[in-house]
Length: 140
Image: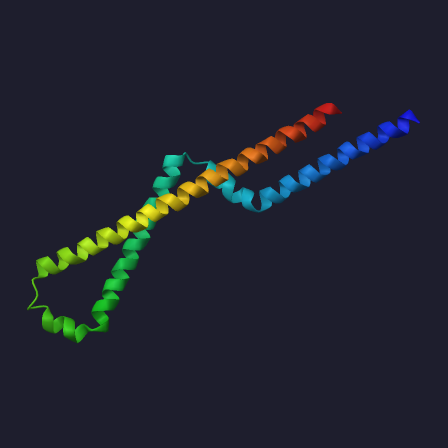
């Protein structure tokens, strides 16, 4: 009778181990890929890289918007180009650009700092599950 009970315990441990391994594999295939990729960076490197990308992309977007604005009303733009103080005009555009880039960079910093923190917490949970799995193997 004692041996049957022992086999049930071993079977239960194996089931728990399989459940934990399945959960961990599901994590690795889904959110784990992103979390592991994020965690490979130092926080400052990750945030700096993301902010650099966002500044470059937003600069390209601002240039496209400006070109679209000029082309939309090109005749009026060409008529007024000789009457407008170009230095003041481009200074005004540059100030708008700096404000937009500053706001966008701030949003990027906040969003990616949260993502980095969440990825680290997620990986901490994953590593705790690895420790549990190792403990299950050690018990056998």
